[in-house]
Amino acid sequence: MWEFLQHLSFWDWLALGTVLLILEVFGAGGYLLWMGIAAAAVGVIKFLVPSLGLEWQLLLFAVLSILTAVYWWRRQRNSAKVSDQPGLNMRGSELIGRTFVVHQAIVEGRGKIKVGDGVWMASGPDAPAGAHVRVIGQEGVILQVETV
Image (cartoon, rainbow, N blue to C red; front, side, top):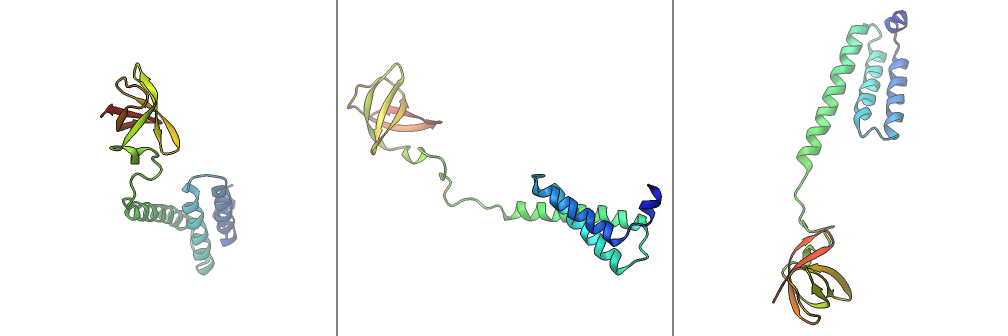
């Protein structure tokens, strides 16, 4: 084994990079992507500098793996921006503050309200069908209401 490692060629590094990139496709979550790129880069450097020793190859691989991963992590962190639509994918949050009619009487804190052409579960103080309520919050798919 040690004899094999002493005589790594650029093909070995390119093969390692290819294997790591293929494994990344199966769902490693980005971890193997940067190691695969680093291995391919060491393969290219080994092709350009054939006399590069094993210690330098391994050190170069480790440093490039860390540098590429840190670069991408920082780039991802800095590119995250605050959404201009914070309520997106939070169905029901746009209903907070609006007034609706009770569709099914709210009894013991549970009932239904008519919202547009649909009906939503509601929780709040008891109210008869036809009463007006205002949405004050949301917990999952249940709207919290108060009587108006």
